[in-house]
Each structure stands twice: as structure tokens, then as C-alpha cells.
Length: 282
Image 1 (tube, rainbow, N blue to C red):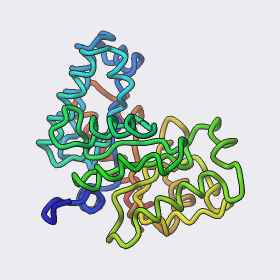
Image 2 (image 1 turned 60 degrees about the horizontal axis):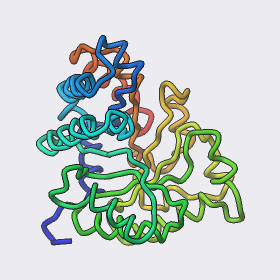
Image 3 (image 1 turned 180 degrees about the horizontal axis):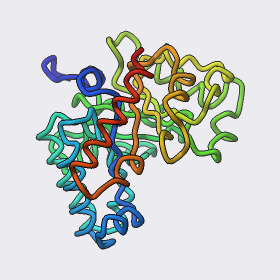
Image 4 (image 1 turned 90 degrees about the horizontal axis):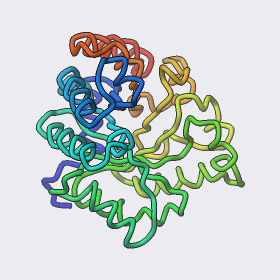
């Protein structure tokens, strides 16, 4: 990576310090589109994303488009996602594209080029990746992210209950092995590394029970589960003790359900940020 290329981890920490830990999820699923009076079409998705960007662009640290809700509309939906990512590049709000890609060899390299390469139509500041073909298989994405100043968020302890039999299995657990590898990738990088972790806000004391030291990982943690999935600020405090200023909190329905008014969305995001900051930054 050229010495003048800003690293993702440093950019994200700076954005969180300036605007708080909220990451607004852009999830144009059919129920929200209907609630906003929009058609379940690529045009409806475009109008939805334009409104969200108008409301929170430059106001929050990051936004997290969920690729699946764009992909379901085919090439027209992908075109909307391309435009959204391009517009985000012109703002100070970072993009975390939720694609959860994970493969091996040349296929993983192609995924990395699609989302992490300079000039790629779908290039984002960071993407989510899954390590369950082996953390080493993520190497093409790790290398390209490092070269272009972008980041990754690696799934470790997710908020869905179906994940526990896999992620908790073994001694040490699968999740602990993932976090150990992320810590190795982030070693020596200050203030945080560019490889983050996905750890659900709903997992409670599971990291401690599995012997996982999240604070030692050098990672920013993306912590889904606040709001519609039942977690609140107190859960964030309990689960993420010791890394309070390194927790990025994605919320979608809890904010977007007040739409389609951009002003109401912006106000909802500001209120939630005001609730999160004292809990996570005290």
C-alpha cells in the first residue's frame, strides 16, 4: 500500500470519533418498501436508497448496504447498488458492503477484485467476509484490502442462533480460532487494524465463556442485533467491555421504519447515536 493511502481502520476510528458508533443499514426489503409506499422494483429500491443517503450521508460514521436486497432485482438492482456506492465515495460516510463472501483461490481473488479493487464498479470501503472455508482462504481479500486502503469484517460470533453449533464447536472453538487469526493480521497496527470482526450484540457473555479476548484482536467490531433483534445499549456494554470505542453498531429497521421522511430518518439516527455514545464511550 502506498504510504499516502489512508488505512481503513484509521479512517473508521476517525469517523466514529467524529460522528459516533452508528452504522445505518440500507436494507430495502419488501416490507420496508411497502411501508414507504414504494414498489418492490429496482426503481423503488433506487428511491429508497436515495432517501436514506439524503438523510444520513455525512451524518453517520458508516452505512451498510445489504447486497442481497439489491441482487434480488437483477442487473437493475445491481446498478442501483453501484450508484449508491459511487455516491458514498463523494461523502465522508464510509461504506461497509454486506456481501458475506468467502471462497478459495481464484474465486476469492475475483470476489476481492469486485469489491476492493480501485476503480471497480462495486468497490466499497469495506466488505463482510465469511471464514468457514478456512481463514487462510481469505488471503486474496486481505492482501487486496491492504493494498488499496480498504477493510474487511470477518464473521466470528454472529447474532443468529443457528450459528452456535458451528461457531462454538471445538477446543479452542471455531470462533476463537477466527479471532486469533484476525489478531495476527492486525498485529502491530495502530490504533486498530483493517480487519474487523462481526460479533452479534445478542451473544451476551459468549466471548468470555469461549475464552475469546476481543480487546486483544486489534479489530473494530461490527455488532449487529441492536433494535429489531432485541439487543440494547446495556448488551453492548456487557459483551464489549474493554473495546468501547471500537464497536460499530449497525441498525436498519430501527431507523428506517420512521421513513420515508429524510428529516425523520435523520432525527432517528441522531437520537440513537445520543443513546449509544454514553454507553459505549463512558
